[in-house]
Image 1 (cartoon, helix red, strand yellow):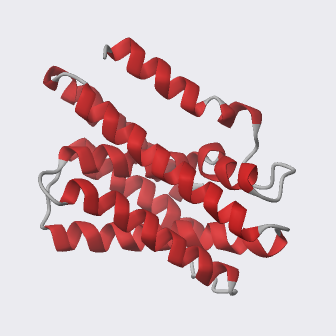
Image 2 (cartoon, one colour):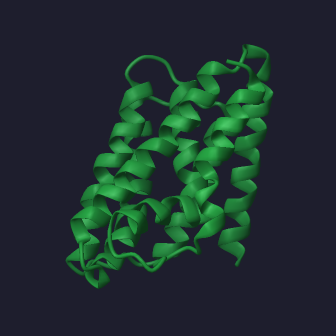
Length: 190
């Protein structure tokens, strides 16, 4: 698969983001759940970064990071639905964009336990944010299915992008991580 085809596929995946604003979207189920991670820049960048970072790893980390994120995010969604609101929730999400972007930019390979713990912490913030929107939904389980599916798709897009690009494109991936980290700084400052 060529670089142009990968970029084209990614553009098609992200096209719905142009049609929807961040929360809500006038749908109380699956479409709203799918739209939330794709339509919010903070969620979009963090979730793509998890896939990019996972693809830069070796061994079990390649699957452990995305699976940890999705599982912990779902747990955080349930906690948010039950009313848990983490202090500095938006700051935690912005910090995840910064940290995950840096991890990609620097292609760090920490011990698996540290990588999983950091990924879980970031996923908790994202999950609680999703869950806090659930009480207003008429169909919270279809909303949850949507945000889980969109998250997994974004992880997959990042992973495939790294694994399908030629090794010579590694600087492009690192540049994407740096851009994500810079956006995280901007989100924290805002």
